[in-house]
Length: 411
Image (cartoon, rainbow, N blue to C red; front, top):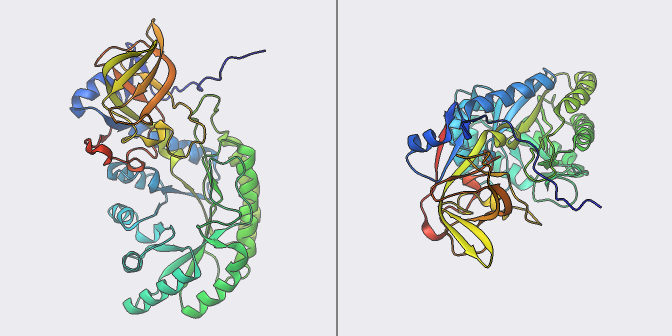
C-alpha cells in the first residue's frame, strides 16, 4: 500500500537561474531591491500575455474573451489585459472606474453582482456600460434610473441555471442562489423588460468556478448554450451577446493537474455551427479571471526568524494571511491544503527540511505552509507563494492588526 502523499504538479512557468527564481526576466533577489521592501506581489506581464495567446490558440476564433476583474484589479494588470482581451467584467463601481480608464469602449464592459446601489446603476447607465441584472427588483430600479437620466440602459439578464458546473471549487449556479434570476423566471422578466423600454443585449449564464475537470466544463458549455438558445427564442429582440461564464481552474494543491484546454476548445468548435444557426447575431463570450492571471503572479515575504517548538521548525515571516488569505487556507478551503511554496532565492538547495511557514499575526490561522518540505531557509531568505496572481491582496483582510499592506508590481 502506497502511503505517500500527492505532490504539487511541476510548475515551470518561471525559470530558475543560479538557483534563484526569475520573474519578468529579473532575478528575485534583484527584484526585491527594485521593489525596496517585502512583502510584495509581482505579476509577470509576459506570462499573462502568453496565457491569452494560449486561449486564442485553442478556443474557436468566434469566441470573445472577457477578463473578470475581481481576480486581480491592479490597474496596471487591467491596462495590460485591456489590450489583449475583448471585454472586461466588473463587480463594483470601483472596478468599473478602473475599467473605464482603459482603452476599451464602455459597451465592452459589463457590470454584474447582486445588491447594486442606485448610484452605481446611475454611473453605469451614464457611462454606457452593460448591466447584468440579478433580479426583477434591480430591473425596475435600472428602468427608473434610465428614465431619470433620459438614457436607455443596456442590459443583460444574469441567469441562475437549473444545473451546476460539476467538480467546481465554487458552485455559482443550480439550486437556490443569490446570483442571477432563476431560469424559469426569465421569460416573464423578458416581457417586463420589453415593456420598460430597456435595451436587451443578451444573457450571462455562470454555473461555477475553479474547475480542473475538462469533461465537466464541456458538459456545462453544452447545457449553457442550449439554455441560452431556449431563452433567446422568448426574447423581444435578437440576442447580441451570450456570456457562457468561465470556470477554468488552475492547479494549486498536491494532486492537482493542469486543465486540458485543447479538448474544451474542440467541444466548443463542435457547438459553433448550432450557435451560428440559432443565434446568428450573438457574440459568444467566455469570462475568465483566475485562469488568465493566477499562474503569472507570486507573493514574496522574508524570513524574520527560525523558531523551534517541540521538535518542529517554524519560519516566521513578515507576510501572512492579512496579505494572502487564500494561501492560508481561509478563503473557501474545507480541508486546508498547501499552495506551492518555495524558498525563492535558493530553490533547489541540497539540504531539505519540513517546516511550517507562519506570519506575524496573533492567530494560529496565520499560516502560509503547514509541514511542507522545502530547502532549508535562513533568516532573510525569501519565501515565495506561487499561483498568486488571482484573489491575492484584494481578497485578503489587509487591515487586520494594522500591518502595512504589500506592494504590487507588474514586471
